[in-house]
Image 1 (cartoon, protein in one colour):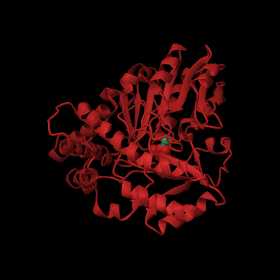
Image 2: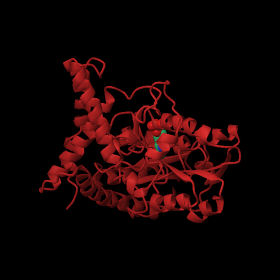
Image 3: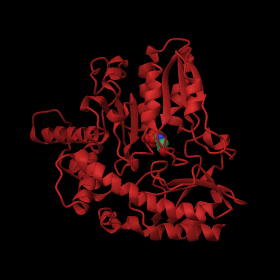
Length: 406
Ligand SMILES: Cc1ncc(COP(=O)(O)O)c(C=O)c1O
């Protein structure tokens, strides 16, 4: 069975498709179901939740439903997730909540592949005497190698922070394997799942990670973020909220989850359910089973898109790809970054924009990887990132556009 992209695209506002959109790793499109849920909340629940009158009760229920759906999407318990503004915000608060648990001489490992959000706040723990070590990519392949991690782990390692899928190279790191190695060394693992979430099903329990974050605006949702924190870790973490709001759900959010955008999360579930019903005729009561079937379909479709682009790039000597030249869905998401011989990266997106093809250039918040692989940090790379609603025709337009640029 193939993913019916015509059907999927009809679930988004029509103007989305005027453009061949390849900036999905920056922020994905939002289906109408998410928009409708936001509007419905703001129309019907214009009050604070948690009071006994009808509109407030409705607000409480809708916010709770967003929270429940998010927990299901991650395979977490409801009291293990925090919904707040951004992944940067979530990791900032988490780093401050773990800071008092660290002693001088304890060690933290960060990578140079990660977006700065899962590096910078951890590096600040050096202020309390924590030793920060860097797990570096192989400069030729731009990939992290397990042996590099194993060399850095010691009996003082407390935490390893690593991205699951690079928002630059698209490469997928083997998180279950890394989590096992980290735990065997007696440390915790904090995973940035932001660039992974739109492409594969998340399962924090099966992977046994301690901390995991996703920005929902890259998962067809609103501009908010979810942080998973394993219950035992959450109980140890120091409350970052006001003194009387230190319960599990609130201790890592010194505010409140957005009242109008948390209910909108349910719209992500509506979207996936509509896709499920369209493709799989047999009913399935279990939401995660529906998601699993759907993400298998999505991975296959994305592999087809990636294969077409890999075939082009592999045969175009003027393009230098950063990351693996493969469409293998176990190894990559369809996010591609590269430089073009004789051109600055910043010159290229405006040329394609004139043809209604949306791509971007820069360092995309990954300040350490770009220079580490020999690319000018300020100019950065050109990035073309695909999602399941992209079509082969759009990839062909992209390739033709690059053909003219090259
Ligand atoms: C891999 C990755 N991690 C983290 C972030 C930061 O997310 P947020 O904007 O929610 O802070 C981004 C944003 O581009 C990202 O691509």
